[in-house]
Image (cartoon, rainbow, N blue to C red; front, side, top):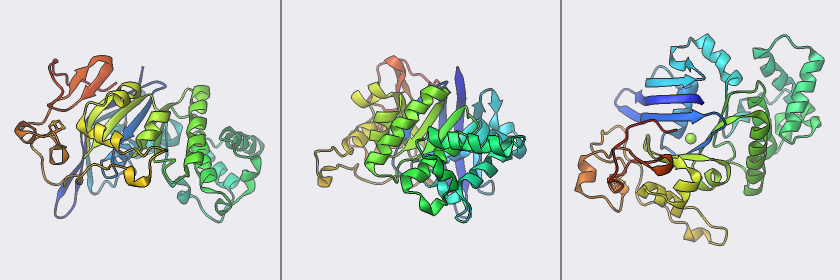
Length: 328
Ligand code: SF4
Ligand code: MG
């Protein structure tokens, strides 16, 4: 069953001098207990996509088209009050530095309790303390964290508190936006495996936004490769990583550093993201693609559906019926 349906989502930013298309016509279906990695370089629109789902984009400049349906509810038709209720309760998010939102002068336990009470006020003080401590323990933090201040925690502990906060009301969907990016490799690995364990226990569904293919490889079942606001390739991690078909995905995979390799061996993709305020007629990746031919600059490739629900938007991948269906 689908927990989240994103249908033809487009996000444009309207500023004084230009219109920037940050997310372009994205459709994605997130099934119950899925773990979907959304991967791409910074500036590819991944966070904008998450913020659009959560309705956290500044209304003054952001225009959103399309539909987002969470567990049968059309989010763009909800009132601000309804959305506030949905956040945390049904849909929780952890950002790279979520803890920056916490006050430095209050203890972790007090702040977690206050946040809990926003959605669930009828709980006794004693019960709430037990609940918070069990949440801390669930993310492998000692109960003494309850009485610590944010500055007394390491980066890894802070992200664990953020994850504990996000799980407070058993959300249907958890969005992690570069949630482990700032951490050292060992702590990142530990937290990723803890998240996978928790998911089994709590039946969680997860979207994981990252610029790092190795995070997707170790922690996700499916992957959507995003570039300049478009999804260029989608499929099971085991298919996309073993048999990447889009030149951009191939480039991203080549740029993963290996443990053996020195930093100088990391191969980036030449060129920069296109200017999203300038409409592109053909393939959005053409300006950086080593395989681009004339047709790539003139005609936008349609998405090809291959076996195993592997989908790719590239003129090089063809020979099958064109399919303009949802990613699932
Ligand atoms: Fe490269 Fe053309 Fe494929 Fe785009 S459609 S990724 S430019 S080969
Ligand atoms: Mg981002």
